[in-house]
Amino acid sequence: MRTIFLLLDSLNRRTLEPYGGAAIKTPNFNRLARRCVTFENHYVGSLPCMPARRDMQTGRLNFLHRGWGPLEPFDDSFAALLHRHGTYSHLVSDHYHYWGDGGATYHNRYDTYEFIRGQERDPWKAMVQPPLERFREMYHPSQFSDERRHKFSAHMINREFIRDYGDFPSVQCFAAGLAFLEANRSADNWLLHLETFDPHEPFHAPAEFRNDYPTGYQGPIFDWPPYRRVTETLEECEELRANYAAIVALCDHEVGRLLDYMDLHRMWDDTALVVTTDHGFLLGEHSWWSKNVMPCYDEVAHIPLFIHHPDYKSRAGERRTGLTQTTDLMPTLMEFHGAPIPADVTGHSLMPLIKEETVLHEGAIYGVFGSAVNVTDGRYTLFLYPEDMHRGELFQYTLMPMHMRELFAIPELQEAQLAPPLPHTKGAPVLKVPATPKSPNYKLHGPAAQQDTRTVMFDLKVDPGQEHPIEDAAAKARLLGTMTELMRRNGAPPEYFDRLGLPR
Image (cartoon, rainbow, N blue to C red):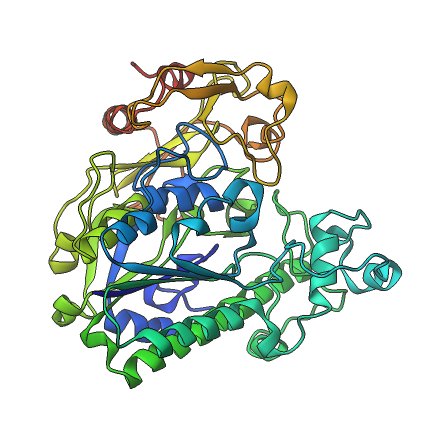
């Protein structure tokens, strides 16, 4: 079996023409949909980037036990398991978080890997004395900094070396992926994980991809939206959206390169293809930019998924409405390659749903560690927040005490305890570390980052934009029951139930 797993970052499904998008031209995503089964109700699990990847690697939810962090010693990684089963795996990615403290155990599970440099704040190019005054004039004040290790500073320096189409990291990712196919497509038993950070912010695309999306904006470079409510002028908002359109158009172009290669070499006959994202992105909807800090609206949580399997070529162009989730990807890839699925996995293989419409999930829970637990049954969504976001009894359970860009701080580790094994830790005790303001994570991806924290419910059938909260006691009771059962099934710690006012 041969598999290509293509993962993009921060792709808003509503911008894609196969999902009804009209503002951005995505002809190659249309081609993709004609070749694949398109999933209508695919949802995130844990947010944001590395928590989502832990879900995909392990088939289990991350956000109930910890925030951003590496794979744990007791985790079952599909790449490692496929290696043991005789399937070669190769990772090509410009997603620099794999090489940071909080992601450093993921790429090592693959047989081989390639890292394409230069995205966002990747500490790539050394410039001891950058031209700060020139940068100050070039960039919008909201995305300029003169601090050496600030994300804006790193990006401004990187961008000095990314000018033409071939310089862009995502373009180089696809080139490296195609090189792998050229060298190995006639071999058997391999999985290519091809991943690009685009269309994640900053929305920096080659100039030619902006041609179809003109605006009247006349200011300095503005392509990095903040993680907060919309306060920008109309012209600034249009500029941000136009730059997102350009980078989605770039992604569409690169997807087209992959499809062209598969067409040329008749790979649809013997190669599976999975295309998805880790989460979506808010582009001003609900008066918000970005993700994480606000409620987990469907623009972030409801994401695209396309799957082609050579045994089901006759299903090409069909659509499925069954509820699916990112945790389903791991068991799906395992089944593609005939590998056994570990008992710890809570996701479901999507093979039955590729074959025909069926029900795999009655509901799905998702969220950011320490924030709301959100649930959907495909008809309704419920965001359940604790009455007090900053109440205690919130812990990270880990044997890998690393945050996004740093190790756990000594003050938070001083309060750590050794806790008995959890159901999924294979008998290993774990550190139980309080999630307190002492943690660098607390203000970034923890309770202090959260805003607009009110419990609310929506009926997606009549209000797909989630603009009008509803009161429906019976529906809410059903969703709370589903949430409670799924939290139990995923081994949520007892205090997480207490935090949300749910029965243990």
